[in-house]
Length: 88
Picture 1 (cartoon, rainbow, N blue to C red):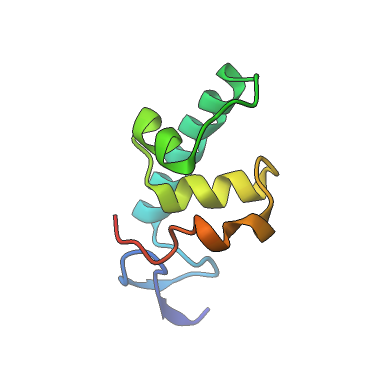
Picture 2: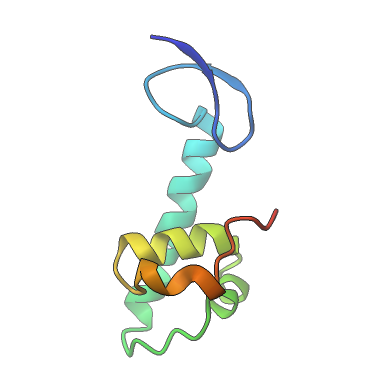
């Protein structure tokens, strides 16, 4: 295993993953919240990434990544709505 930095917080980690244990647990928790939110709102009327973020308390960057991974939005449509550069 190699010593590297966590992609989220910058802490040094010695694992095969990209995140430290704390960040990985937080990311999994946020994904669980989003999964429940999208299962409860099956009408596909989710609104914007900002509205999903404000309704769930999950950062817009994580919401955006989750929506792309689960094909709720097309990654080609993100040029005008990308939150990747925003700190949360």
